[in-house]
Amino acid sequence: MSKLKIAIQKSGRLSEKSLNLLKESGINISNGTSKLRAEAKNFPIEVLFLRDDDIPQYVEQQVADIGILGKNEVLEKGKNVTIIEELGFAACRLSLAIPKGESYSGLKYFNNKSVATSYPNILSQFFANNNITAELEEIGGSVEIAPSIGLANAVCDIVSTGSTLITNGLKEVETVLKSQAVLIANKELSKEKRDILDKLLFRIKAVIRSSENKYIVLNAPNEAIDKISGILPGMKSPTVVPLAKQGWSSMHSVVKEDEFWDVIDQLRTLGAEGILVIPIEKMVL
Ligand code: ATP
Ligand code: ZN
Image (cartoon, helix red, strand yellow):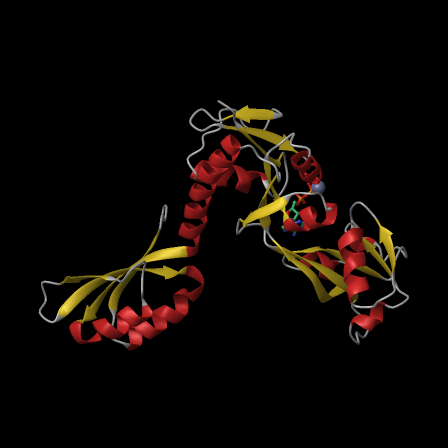
């Protein structure tokens, strides 16, 4: 039986989270990342550990069938592969930054300026779309020091918190691209491999969904049940169980992580008490 080959980053910001996603999807990899490849015992998949820069090319050439890496790297390399799922981790952005003492008047600031970057393809496309003529200095790393050593007027680099820019006397002025880890695939997978991929995707989606949602349990006066059901729709509708105490019920439902605090405030206003919020291990629809 054929196996699906997945390429993940050997060592770097994506390695541990990529392995973890596979593990949470029930895929046990025998050896760690010390070797170039590893096999799963309980799923028809083989893992290749590579530099993230090489993954798009390997997936295009079907050395690997699928891969996990930053969307920024996928778009920069421009290989003929498909992005099939956003994975919800390694969130960052590709941003333009200038020396903090400069006044910024909008994108036209960059006309006739030089910009250091490791993302020349994405950046030249961005400038072209906005009718800006700038000179790009392509460098491999430590982009943020370019202005202070006189290599360029500005930089375009990956930012997550922005602290590296600030430490180097720069300020972020434009977002060129929002990025996160994505799953990419070769465009011509066999039917057999496509079936394995569908199984894997079903599991990955359940894992992502579970991390984006919480299970919520609370006590409510019976007259508030209808209103609370409106706020907490759950997967179908909330479970309502009577409490031993007359006139009260326990309600169980699911709430989105990012709406969580808003929802809690509304629930308290409606008279909810004893609110418990519990992580979800897997969420299958
Ligand atoms: P490799 O040795 O595999 O080429 P790398 O140095 O290119 O590794 P990392 O620094 O490990 O790559 O980053 C991998 C990806 O993590 C980036 O392409 C980006 O999508 C994401 N990322 C998230 N936050 C950040 C950040 N603050 N700085 C850089 N990359 C980040
Ligand atoms: Zn890299």
